[in-house]
Image (cartoon, rainbow, N blue to C red):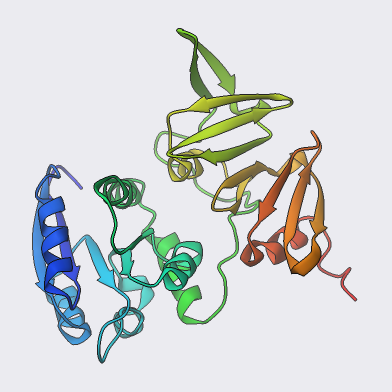
Length: 273
């Protein structure tokens, strides 16, 4: 970003929703409102002419929807996108396969801050190419594969995370990333699981996912990241849901959109009847 303000475009057909975002962005440092649009056609024009860094994009709008806007612009040319919606099913799908984050209306200040922090981080880590691929997957009607073993992946500028500081009972200890079996969400924080021990860390899942080597770790669910070589078995539950069992015996939920990629990694792609 070279120290310049982050340019933000707000797209929503509801005046109150636009004002809510304007008020929240007014409390953020180094932000410039590039523009405001109240429909999909105006959004396409604004993205093309104003070149914002981030767009808050309503999904359900009369005429051209937020997804129509992405199709018109092209996923590879979209700014970092935070979808906004009043419909949770749309939001969850967007979060799984496309946008850097989503906001389900009505959202609170903390939820907004989390989403906007992710947008900043995506730009800082130059992740636009990955986000474009996820947006393209959404438009093609297919789930994006989790970031599984990819030996050629380039690390962020600071390198992949190798250790995590954990504060417990007034002491700070260092947990080597190589010892972690899994990371799970715990409210606004995460838990690191090493064997039968767990530590609470004041960090976000997305932050850690961004810093972990994708050749060793993958996100299997919104609430779980696992170390690939700690996987013992993929279990199919009643109703078609899946659970991942680790070598430690811990079991974690698996999003259905992540099952195919996990089976390929485990060499099970040809095992289906």
